[in-house]
Amino acid sequence: MSASDQPILRVRNLATAFDTDGGRVTAVDGVSFDVPRGKTLGIVGESGCGKSVTAMSIMRLLPRPSGVILGGEVLLDGTDLLQLSLDEMRKVRGKRVSMIFQEPMTALNPVHRIGRQLSEVFLLHEKISEKEAWNRSIEMLAKVGIPAPEIRVGEFPHQLSGGMRQRVVIAMALALKPSLVIADEPTTALDVTIQAQILELMKELQAEMGMSIVLITHDLGVIAEMCDEVVVMYAGRVAERGSADVIFNNPRHLYTRGLLDSIPRLGGKRKATLQTIPGMVPGLAEMPVGARFAPRSPHPKAPAYIASPAYQNKRPELLQIAPNHWVEDEEVVRVIKQEVSQ
Image 1 (tube, one colour):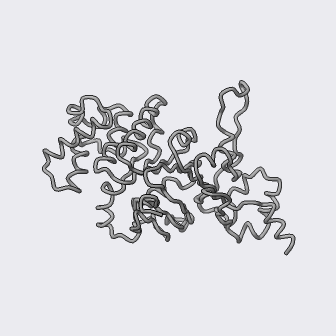
Image 2 (cartoon, rainbow, N blue to C red):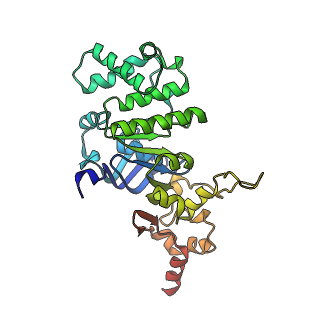
Image 3 (spheres, rainbow, N blue to C red):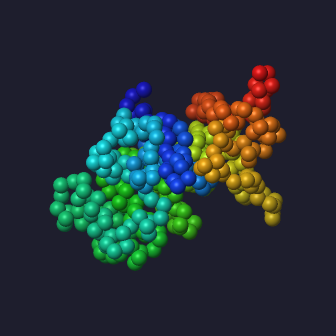
């Protein structure tokens, strides 16, 4: 495999926990995936499944001192980001890997002008004058489609619309042409028209700059439109991963099927009740060792599996069942058969 065919990012057995008053709880539990070079990988799942914590772990931006990376590897072009010092990691952020945060109003400093915040990206990583940094900031605002960038660069975040603020955040993330961009719910707070514009902008910039994207969202429609590869997360673990075609056309995990079945479809029966997944994602302090989706699973053998020792003691493996298709081994029937045979 040539260097150009190698994944730009390899995440292996990433585990992240938080120290709370009630003890340490694990939010990301042994997550592994690859990000193809020049492609988009989507991470999808319900709120609380560990998507954003995975991204913050990759960026080494966990809240301190409560957030702790317990183990694993995050290999960016062969460099393990988890082994870098804080000073070394600061040089990587923005230059080699950057992040588009979920809510632009909180990502931007409300008391500093747009130009100052964008200029800081250039000044921190490159030896250029403040005037040159200001001019390059204007160029970046123009690149992301902000009208009259020479005026907007002198304004404060509250003077811009939500869509324009998100474009500013994208401009900051792409200013130094990083090879990898992590976008955490970049369109959640926007209306559908602006959302479409932002997604189209990200596609255009990716084609122009050749960057890889990790797109975190709960919206399967966005995943279908944007992504080449998909990781489905549930309760801090990877339930299923593979190419977008495989995940959408041949989902194997019952959780993935439940997510896809909950999407309203054009041409469906009018006023039909939307499909839902019963139950809730378990709390971080209540995570079992076994298949975490089992309490919500529609499988008829699920209650028997939950009552078995395997649910308490055996973590299911992530098995490759086809080329570029992995699924958590949650076959409760097989587990029950094994219990009976023993």
